[in-house]
Image 1 (spheres, helix red, strand yellow):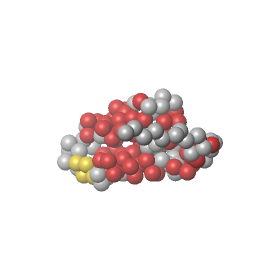
Image 2 (cartoon, one colour):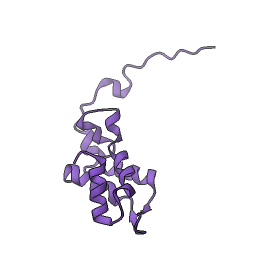
Image 3 (cartoon, helix red, strand yellow):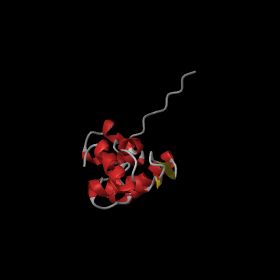
Image 4 (cartoon, one colour):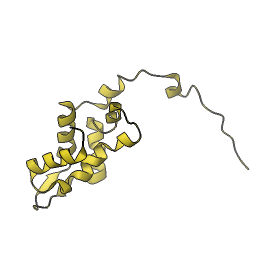
Length: 115
């Protein structure tokens, strides 16, 4: 799946309510595309840690338009399972990124203090 609305419709089928009840969560899951338009944008929210962050942003539960309380954590878990077929850890993503010297601060720029 590639569109937040498609994921939101899937959520509505699963937990009731309408796609509008879920679309903000699914949009946030894919919002990293705006900064990095490659499939690796998923490393931010498409992981167990990313799912935790989504729950932190939206809270533990939402109440859909049918009045049903839905655990927020279940929504991004569903999203990741639909996209990837499993929920990777953040380490699963990061171990695929070769370390670079700049990541350890090897290319620090001098700090210029303006008085």
